[in-house]
Image (cartoon, rainbow, N blue to C red; front, side, top):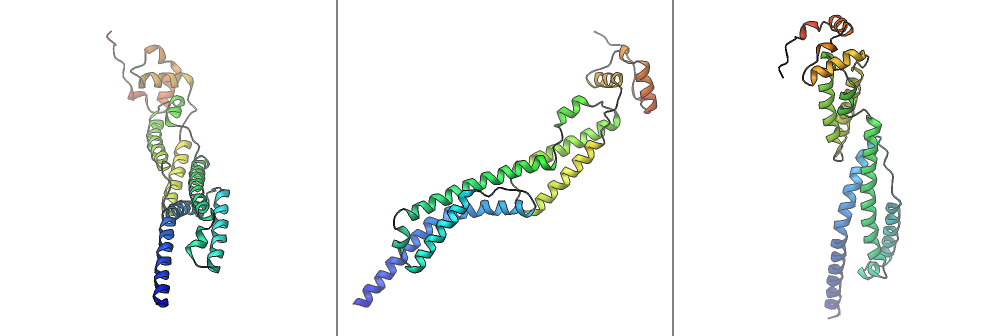
Length: 225
């Protein structure tokens, strides 16, 4: 009879421990997911702050484990507020790791490429044929680069691809020719927005168009109002 009582007690204890294990599983899985994302960034050399709450949770877990190893019962884990506090620590650490990882990723975007938005480039750029080609490429790359930072990378290959995007963006930005006479810039902007009056077709503009083999690209016609 005593043996049966002991077996029953063991079964009951095992059930209590399984309940605690289940209670711990969800927050631990969530924390691990955020830690894995953080690891992807740090492995790529991206700086991510380690929140103090992570160390606090690790210390509390170590203390509880030591006590449990001395007396392997559910009551050991549930004594006082240690178990409840552990769950709260894991939740806090999970949130803080997620925030730190996101902040590190956003900061890395500026570190990788801090070039202007296409709309800013467009406002300062004379749309010559070469500039138009370069601008279209810049606009496409910039959009792809921006979207890439909307989510955290799941692997090293994603970070490598984004680094390549940033390098292509930087190279494209360097190909812009901002050294265009003000008269030429005014003429080209007018052309792009519906048409340039003859007054803008100055000698400077004609000389520049001729020098850039672009004079034959334009035609004059009467504007009917």
